[in-house]
Amino acid sequence: MKILILAQEISIDQSGGSGRVVWEEARALARRGHTVAVGVPRARHELATEEKRDEVTIFRYGNVKRRETMGRFIADILDTPRFVKQMLVGARWDAVIAHHPHVAYGALRVSGMRKPPFIYIFHASAAAEMKYEGLSRPALNRFAAWFLKFFFVRGTALIERKVLRSARAVGVFSDFSGTLMRQLYGWAVRKTTVTRLPMGVDTKRFYSTESRQAVRERLGLDKDALIFVTVRRLVPRTGVRILLDAFLIVRDRMGDNVQLIVVGEGREREALERHAASIGLKKFVRFVGRSGDDDLPFWYQAADASVVPTVAYEGFGISIIESMACGTPVIGTPVGAIPEILLAFDERLLADAPRPVALADRLVWFAEEGAHEEWMEPCRDFVKRWYSWDKHAEKVEELLEEIRSVK
Image (cartoon, rainbow, N blue to C red; front, side, top):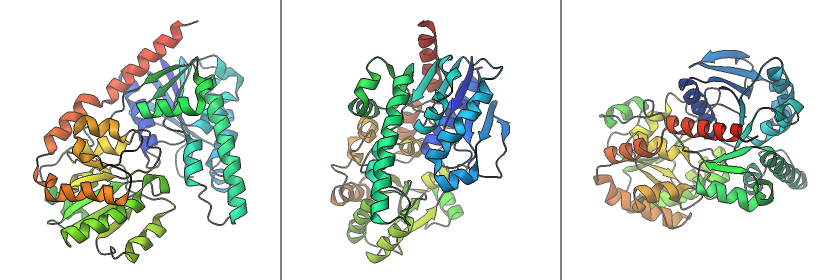
């Protein structure tokens, strides 16, 4: 089949969980013999307009400056139709798969998009996340921020509803995402085929190491400390602040030989660094910023355990299975899809609530008991059994065949 994938981002251009899903899906479909093209807005000026990598053709489009000044949501709605029109001229696509609502909505503004089967992948609700997190524009005064937040949340909800209603089929990665979608947009998807797609992880890239000490030396970490790592976008929803408060309790209980590594960027970084310093954790918490995809496995490999402290809207949590693929167990909060993964592996790793004391309880348990157990092989075996991009691609193929057979 000839498949066009549309997305707001891909991981080879910028780090991020949803962008990694897009790229791995494209690669897996290409490995199975399909002709695959990915259309994505250009994130930076220096990125090529067109290139081929791993048998996937990547097209980058749009105005980088407009994206920087107007915001990516508006820019993607404006720039995507022109790109899609160009892709439809003289080309016959067997299917179009879209991964993010504003790009999908921009594509649906093109009349020719009604011809090929259109699948939408619902990672989570952008409108719900925006309502929870607000806008990342600190220069706005309180009234302007409130007005724009109201406008963007309502507008994005309308866009998501339109996209879901227009899709021939919708894919979700967890029971949580499917339930959330029906709660928010039940009428829009009442006649739509909704399919749970397996999430995947590249176990050749995310792999376990025989020498954690060597990895720590490479990263400049203490070889003897008990190290927790969290790989997060630094926004309110991802819960890094409650993790810092929880880690203060851990350090008080366990002493100075514990460290926390925070991998990721986001608008809360400066505030989180100040908070860590204000509660006496400056020497014990290291913010390393954004990690390139090539280096990300090393942070998982270096840690005794990963932490996913989400407080709202975790559609899946790809960092969980990436960490486990590296042989490193994950402690998480009971939010979104996190329990679906951790309860199937080891219920002791799941906190009772997304609050500092409850999370600290699990971290202290791990420091005192869990760290002495063997986790590497059980984690790897669990991921290999349940999470595969080839299984994901196979399910996408089945879904495409199903909707193409229905006239």
